[in-house]
Figure 1 (cartoon, each protein chain N blue to C red):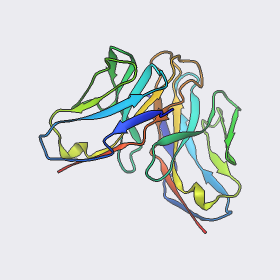
Figure 2: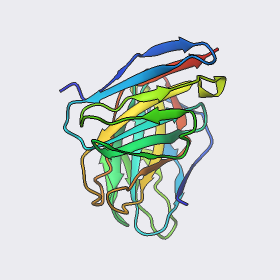
Figure 3: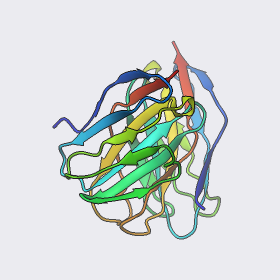
Length: 114
Length: 116
């Protein structure tokens, strides 16, 4: 079945550091890929998405490129802020039609110190 | 819009007790989901529904039941609470259709359940 693998965490960075969070996937067909973010005490919310190979999703300074050849969707940000401290989830959608569902990775906690 | 509303936010249960977690959305979404989130384990799908009167099992349905009598509401029932059900529960919804990119979920704020 489909699966999403995220790098092990947690990750602690200083403000203005460069961020990379790795995500690889296994899926049949042509999935859509997503990054969701969960701020403390809140539910998940969509950060960015990409629906086909070579698409780049971007939002709030974060970027991720759908790489079919390496089955990856790594999240990057050039300069993190304290307000980026959260849990980040990579996810894929199997796009099989009406019953298509999301498969989530385990999530990684990012802490940004001033 | 309120989005997806979950109640209660916190609850402590004793082993063997029953309770219902409530979920309501006001976005006219046909698709609704219940996930549980355990530390270091990501989100696991418990049950989902593609419309009123239709429900189906996810990855981890044992010990839970759902119903979907209206488009707006999707309650999750725990009949005989067990310590293994200690978790944070999230309800989510989305628009209809399986087109690529349509699977953008709107999540509630979560319900933290502890079973002692």
